[in-house]
Length: 120
Length: 420
Image (cartoon, rainbow over all chains, first blue to last red; front, side, top):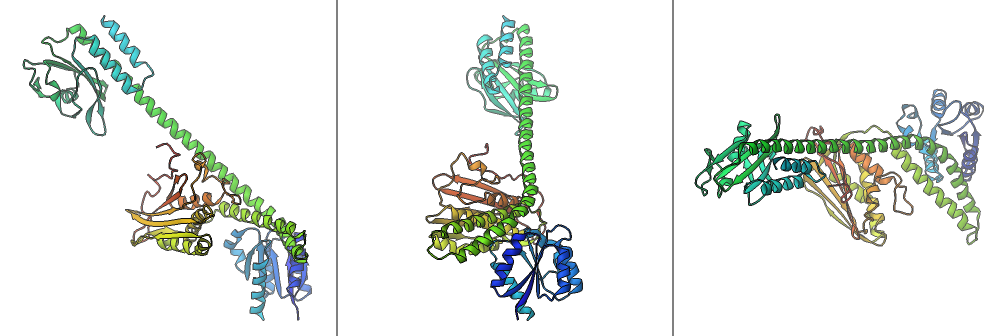
């Protein structure tokens, strides 16, 4: 059974890139362009892991993270951001991993693999 | 005739010559124009509390007088001019005062150079003749002394003003720099975010394309170029964000030797690959500092990385640590040929680099980290041979408190660039 990953990012290019790369790794990937959309997706289908951008128009990633953890306590979330300094932000501590965005996706993929294995 | 001398003295004291030149010329003029055989100006050295011979009219003079020594000492005590005459030219006593300067003379007049309570020195006139100067002349020398004193005073005020001006100017430059850096920090943090996201797409898709292109295809290098340049831009953004980050320091007691050793370990392989010989001379004395060990490590990483990058074709990296009283000192020396003397002054400026692929932020960050730890970083550039970076950090006592005044009295410098 394929693992289902939800990618939440307001940038189309990044959504497409993550989708293609993660599908190659054997995941099934769903996309959401905003926090609101992401929460709707989570209601509708069962997801194993969320990749969450922090800086988005509307509801930002930290708020989405809080809502996810309230409702789906055990659903792992990886925060992806352009800023390393969010690491010091209390709001991000509930996430399962924190990745600084890079065109080199190796770190992200490793973290995804780790978390999914831990969960299994 | 008397007024002639006076007007020439005024002319000299008003001139643009340096103070000691002025005084020498005045002493020479008086020795020539007055019926005297020696004329000296002694300046009062407030720090050493001594009168120092600064200008000779004719003949030799005593180098210096203590505060209570000789005729200058007497004049300092009474605040008034003094004149002495004696029968025996070979004796050193005159007017009840012992003064080596009197030997060989039969009379002397010493005038105070002062303005109110402020002492500048004395004017010392000597004669081999029996008779001293007539009263009219003495009055004139009194006026000349006042003129010399006011000339010294205005010179000192000028120096004080110039120093204050230079300090202000220096401060202004630093303020402007600080403002620039702050503006840079804010701008770059927001810019970095806007740039990083598109870079992830560009680089990520380039990597995907690369997988699809047949090995040996002429198109492969194009994609590789894209990837390489994206990586470079991403590194620049990381540096900018590190630089802009106003992170609170997590202070603990760290051992400088351990931090340095850790940084060296990181580059062991790079040194081996580049045929760089590493000479490690770490102090056996403990060098504990209150520091954010993570940040301090970044600072030394940068210095060592810099040294290694300067030695593309091998060389020698020397890392030495030593305890200097309250300071832990680290010298990092490379044999990479140094930097052109004309541009070494820029090396701590943001975005300055001599490398083809540097961001120009490494040393700026290092400088910032060391300064935040109340330390200093100095550069000695031996052009043609290599560079030595010297980091000095205030060591702590066993309780882990910072010694007071770590910042004061220490100033980072670039050898051969800052005025001595």
